Length: 146
Picture 1 (cartoon, rainbow, N blue to C red):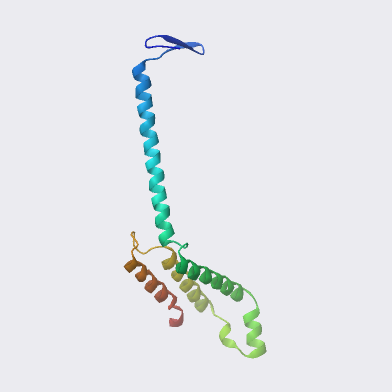
Picture 2 (picture 1 turned 90 degrees about the horizontal axis):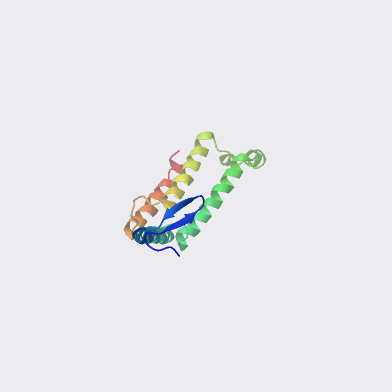
């Protein structure tokens, strides 16, 4: 055991161990660990906030999931020849969307999901959450304007 002021062998050179250095290193290590714990505590706090506002909340998460599913079906529908076949066979011409209308529907889905997934303000409260719902529904209402 090496005491204060003694020289301890360390590889090919000697290392002087002082009690003050050990105490300083220990206190520095404690400070670093405290900062890490605070950072993890902040991360847990942010995760809790994300759970309250994000897609994991009950109604909001279900609506976002259904909207994503409907958006996927829409993308598959306009990419397939099915609208043209329906128009030719059954005379349903409104299912064939021009480029402008397809982009409008695409933008409507994007705005709807954007306002439901991401808060419009940095701190989400119930009042602001209602505002996000209003903005999401109004964003979805862009399609009939085209």
